[in-house]
Each structure stands twice: as C-alpha cells, then as structure tokens.
Image (cartoon, rainbow, N blue to C red; front, side, top):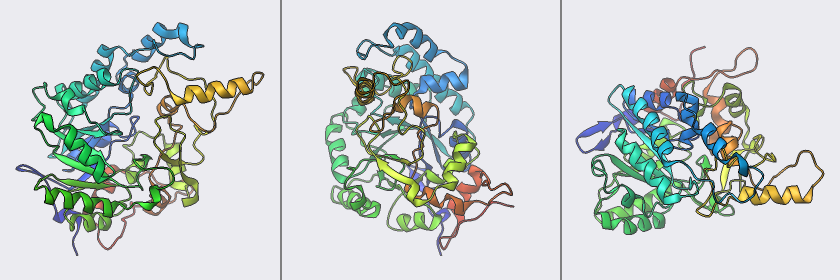
Length: 416
C-alpha cells in the first residue's frame, strides 16, 4: 500500500516531499509553520494578507498607527476615497516578513507566499505590484496567486530580475479560470510553474457560487485540468487542495497524476499555527452542523467559517483608517454600506448588529472570523482529549509526518 512519501514533487531537478501547507491569512500560516514544512522537505506558505499589520505585531513597526494618525480626521466619514496606503510601508513590511522568514529557513524544502488579489487596498494595481515585487526582491522561493483571476499579475512582475527564476503558481477552482489566466498572461511568454486546483471543501473564501458550491467535486475539476494540459501538451504540476484530510486521501490524487497536495485544515490546530489556543479549541469542538458557507465577506466571495465566529453579527465601526485592505479602487467596501444602513435604521442604539457583512480586516486581524475547511469537525479525531476536556495541541511535524507516512486512511494520534 502506497504512502505519500513514495512520491515526489519535482521542480526541474529539485525534488520535494509532495506536501504543500496552504497560506492562511492573517498570519494564521505563520513563518514558523512555513519553516517547519520546509525543514521537513515540503513546501510551506506564509501569507501576504495585511502585512503592515503583521509587521507591527511581529517586528515592532508602527505602520498601522502611522496610517491611523494620518487619516484619523476621516473616521466618521463614510467616504473612504482619500484613504491610501503608503507604498513604501507595504514594500517594507513585505521585505521584513519575507526576508526574516527566508533567513531562518533550514532543510531541503521551499517557502512560498500566498498573494490575494482581492486585497485591493484602494489602489489594486499599484499595491499588488509592490507586494509581488517586494516578495521577489526579499528572496521568496515562490508566489502562489490566490483569491482572484490574476489576469494581469504576471505583467506586474515581468520586469523583475527574478520573474523567471522564482516559482510562480496560480490557484483556480475551474478549468475556465485556468484558461483565462493562461490566455491573459500569454504575452509574458511565461507559464505558471504549478497550478493549485482548489475544490469546494476548502476553508475561507471559495471560488464557487453560494447556491451551487456543493455541486462541484475536487477530483472532477482536477481531472478536467489534467486532461486540458495533456491536450495542450503543457507539462505543469497540478496540486489539488480542499478536503484532503488523510495521507490516503492524498495518495489517491498522487496516483492519478497530481504532483503534490495542498493541505491546511489540520495545521490550524498545530502549535506553530497563528490561531490563539482558545480559538483552536473551538475548532476541535466543532461539529459538522457548526460549519457554514455564507456571504458575510465584503469581497463578494462565499466564505466557509464556524457559525459561532464573533465576527458574525458584530456591528463594529469600519476600521478603514487603520486597515482598509478591502477598499476597492473607488474607496468602497460593502461592509461600510451595511454598517451605515444599520446605523440609519437604529439611530438611538448604543450598539448595532450587522449580520449580512463583516468588517473582515478588523476581525481577521483579531482572530474573530473563524474561517475553516469543511472537515474541521474531524479535527477532534486527530488529537487526544485532556483531563480538563480540552484537546491536545499538535506539532506541525506530527501532522506533516502523518500525511507523509500514513496508510489505510489511518490518522496517528499524538503521544499521550
């Protein structure tokens, strides 16, 4: 019976354990978690979501405070058009996070950064360019383009000296999305080095409709991508993601031609993960009925999360002067509209509630938006219960090696 370790992810002459730990923001996929994946011979991701905020927490910068002081006059104004990010601060926060992570790297694996196009930051093209180029300049091994079609992202990097050196990949949820990406980026004469096919059971934002996500299947989409690449005679590694919970699940994709698998949900309850331990216990306790796909994200994408996330129904004032990562090119965010609507409907209320949208920036920063994968309810089966009723937090190494060496759909429990 085969195990994941019988296969290898190949980038040219380089061979890696075919396990890629997904990039979860905001700093849920910490540098420490990514470094463990790389040390063990696989691929780890950090995330570039809200890096000025992450930099303040990790490296004692003051980017958020500086931005707030600059735009404090606008807090009570629903028009956020004038609120702009300092491109120098974005570049510096990216440099700090990437360079310090790469300096600490050990082992034979690689470290990539997950870059979300939906972080439009009131200047989509300009801020995305700085983030992409900054990561390349700081020495990242690769960039995974996520949360968007990224039809112009290669063009934003093609003048960088590492454009053809670093590994560049794209996350898609359909063959059509891949075809659009390849067609729009063909002018750069550069194919992606890998394709992550993300299915409907993944955590966080989904590339499917709210009403039909359950009609799709990761294996079907992956096979469609495989067939298209064969027909076009394109040799690009395909990496399925979303709902791959055991090593045996992973092997079934590897045997069908996948180059590797991307996994994340099981690492949310690792010691190296950025989630606070009290939140990790909520993940352990969750039942299948505690998990929902909703439209509270102002990005417009459906989002899978725990129903008891504190972000749901929270009516906090929009924090765009401090954050504002989801402001579109016109300084607009759907949460601002939802918040102002509730204020107008309840003019005398000391505290309002907003259920249809959430201030994603503030709540993700404070770990109060508990996004999760479909199989989060199975996490309790991967650990042991402590005497006080809580669950044992696992090490990333334990989880990684369980994927790497397990067979027969078994899950290795931690030592008692």
